[in-house]
Structures are given as C-alpha cells and as structure tokens.
Length: 283
Image 1 (cartoon, helix red, strand yellow):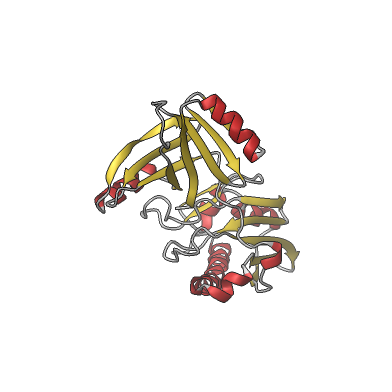
Image 2: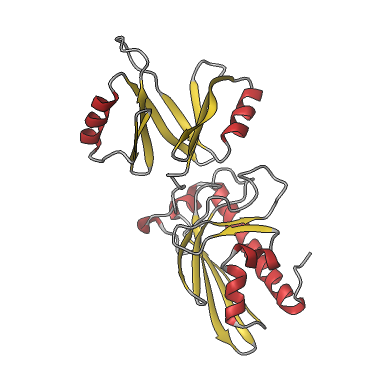
C-alpha cells in the first residue's frame, strides 16, 4: 500500500468545477474525461466526478488509498467487517478503483492509478543522513556480462531470483520478486524505479523496505551499482544511500531497515560470487 493518494469530490457542473480548480490550484487537469477530472497536486490527486443530483447540500467525498490490487484489498477490508460501497471497476485510462464503508460509516476507497508512481525517494537534500551501506567484491566475469546480470529481468533471473521486471530507462520498473508465492505487493521491490544509468558502468534505482517493516515499506531509499575493471574480472560496488536523517533518529523501523539491508546486500553479492564461480544460481 502506497498511502493516501486521492481525494475525490463531486460537482453537479463538472466543467465549472474543472475551471474553478484549475484556477485555484494553478495547474491543468492531467486526466480530463466526462466521467472524471483529475489534478496532480504535487504528487497527490484531487479528483472530481459528476454529481447525480444538483440539489443543495454538501457533495460526497471519498479518500482513496493507493494499492497494487484493488480487488484483493477490498476483499480484505470486507472480511474485517466493512461493506462494499463501490464495486471495483476499471474506469479507463489505467485507473481501477472501488470503495468500502467501514464499520463506523466512513467511506474508504482504493485506487490503482498508473499515472501516479509512488514517490521516488523519501530523503530530501536537507534531511539526508551521511550513513551509507557499502559492499563490494571482485567477480571473475567481464564487465559486459556483469552488467547484463543486473540490468534486465532475464539477467537477474539467471543468478538471483526466479522473476524480475526491469526496463532500462529512467522511471522504468526495477522490481525484483524475491518471494513468488507471497501476495501481490509483498513479493519484493514492487514500485521501485530506475533512476539513471551509464551503460556497463553505473545503475541507480529506488529501493523499498521488506513487507514486514510496514512503517518504512513504501519510504524509498536508493541504490547505486558501480562496475569497474579489476585484476581477475569486474569490481562490483553497491552503495545503498538515501536514508532520511530525521527518520533514522525518530523511527525504530528505519534502523531495522538499515540493519536488514546491510545483511541483505552482503548476501546478494555472495550469491553473485557463487554464480560467477559455478555458473549456477545458488540454492
């Protein structure tokens, strides 16, 4: 779950509401259809739908949680005692949404919106901890080969996991699925994105915490992979940075996340070394 993403309002005159909020917010809608007008407000969405009745009184509003699987999330909440308010529906343009009413009468929505990626990184320049996780080793493989192993889903599936999704472009997915049998959204680095690359030399991507650390799960840090020639093969250096200074000081799960990845990246490089030595994926 990516957190609160969308506030949906109603208006009996959708065109008038569109003009009003375009002026009020200072931005044009990113999604403009007769059934829905959506504004990107600094990474948060304000959506407006037609109101069925033009009668006086306040319009209805629903706050939406951004999720990977709308149907599964609605089923989970209904199992906890909620009732269905809006059935899960594809509304076009890559949007799927639905809503429940909680046991206290509140409307809670769920949205999968392909127009909105999760916030890229958490730490701002003025809140960046100097702490970093750094691991490196030399593997007896040419740099071209090592690059292929990291820069594509097929390459990662050769030595690290069974399945990965990588599109080598800024903003493209860098999703490694470590636990195939887990529910969607908890299999690995879902939502992570390529930040930049220099072919066969450097690749950087966002990174999230494991699912059991819920308070930092969708608070993205970033990883820089550097490759260089070395005697006997290729030097592989992994630097995991982007840790928010305030978070490390105030939220225990940030420290747990840091410690988790200090161990995890060492294990990843050990797996790479095992593959380089044997030509087989370590078990």
